[in-house]
Length: 50
Image (cartoon, rainbow, N blue to C red; front, side, top):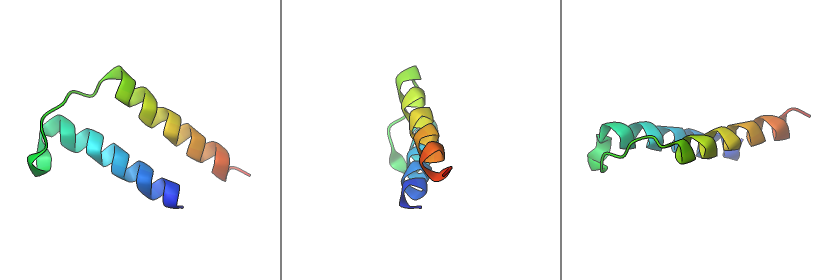
């Protein structure tokens, strides 16, 4: 369950960074960042699907 919270923070960071929310520098969502987020989501799903 902690992993889901961390993953949610990562997804929010991607969105907030893209739009410049909370005084974050505007950064595009790159392929590398997107693949990392998807890999984390897949890992969480595989771990919790016992």
